[in-house]
Image 1 (cartoon, helix red, strand yellow):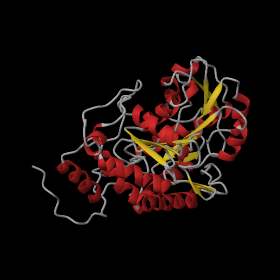
Image 2: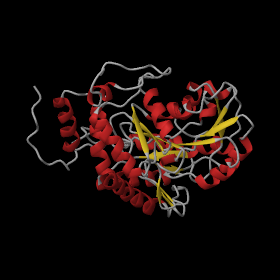
Image 3: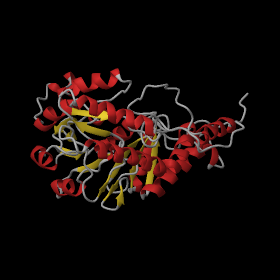
Image 4: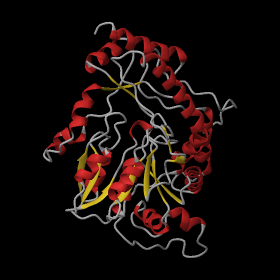
Length: 392
């Protein structure tokens, strides 16, 4: 039997249980998320249903997109977005060398070949100049990744692909709440994918979404996420008056829809997104104030017209691996985002040339950044980093 919690303090963050150790990421969960999950559990409908539908509508309104299709991961979102393009084995999709492996793997799932382009030295976002160099007659799409939450140069990328049969699919896994020249990331391109992984700015535990303004794509995506079936179980059960059991299988689809338990978490997280992103920005401002006076630390930029969602706070430093060991000895877990994809064994055979990525990844370090990082923990991180500088 599930008992409803007596506490009404829905805004208080639930303890993470990590005593003394400061992780690089940590989700921010309150009693409100727990209550929302309990409500779904009591409802008797746990799968794809009314709560997922509400979440999709709320996301569409927030991001200014006509259609939102929720899925079980950001990887699935990229995969299904690419499936819409009917890619062939000789087709190419340009992706950044520095990103999580899902960006490139999704291209492979779709039957095409990822082509690795270099990144900008400051933001680590996709290099417009290198995209221009790597476009060929076989290029069908580009996937800019808003690295760390900082928007890519979308105008430059649009100019680079103008007049060509090339679709832009934004990978906004890090960019929930980011702003590009006054407009929210999410409704600016033909297709945008989000991740709602456990430690993203907006978490569903696991989940993802595709945003589009094309009604035909919305229909296709809803079939693709549900095995190619014309109507999902919820739609048949709620909206159909007769023949509720009846459906057609129109294409080869997948089983990658979101369910109402995840969506319930997401609805609460969406209401808390701006507050949590403000907390992230407060941490970033403290880091920047502490690190910028020190020439051996390069802090991440926020370029004019851009507003980062600050999913990742990366610095560039000499002797990066020694600094990692130094921080770990002090109970701090940093990260490295990321080892360049084209250097991994699976992709190395392509012999991609991305000199900036190959040089810069050796100096990149991600410091702890999450909404519930305390002032005392921020001070610990700052003091630990600066004490390393005394050894250089």
